[in-house]
Length: 218
Image 1: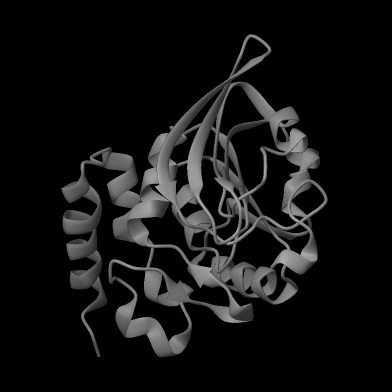
Image 2 (image 1 turned 30 degrees about the vertical axis):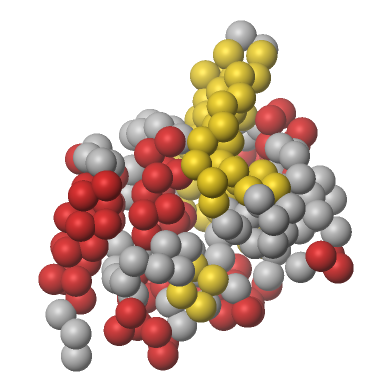
């Protein structure tokens, strides 16, 4: 049986802090959340490798550094309510829940939503709520959000997500065509205006939904 605690610490030191992300709350969250619980069982021994891994429903869990980079870019902090679009296995939502006060994570695949919900219950992460639905529409019931993160690439930033972003809040998501060039963008809401900044080149699955890509492109 691998020493997951040691592998987790090495991941934090080498893959996250070693690449310049040094916020203590962020690093502590990555030290606390057991990534091996959030990957397909056959890949548990690779849970702390520097790469994405398969999960259920034919989807993937992102490379740890990318998750950390997006959380850092969104300036997630205590006292916030955060929305995650594309919960997947629930790993990023669990990390967000170790930093923010409340997290809502929306997932369109019923199987993934169910499994992520079970993982939160098993780990006792009671401030993380997993809901099933169209992530491009956000989750207006709990809005506004101090931070919104999307784990899938849209053709544009959905208006619904902009509407649900609190004043002073930050949205981080990839934009670009499936299989084509994609780039992370950061959007800040200030004084009723939205300030957009382009960041790193990335590669994500398409954001499917009413305000995203159509189903057949997945």
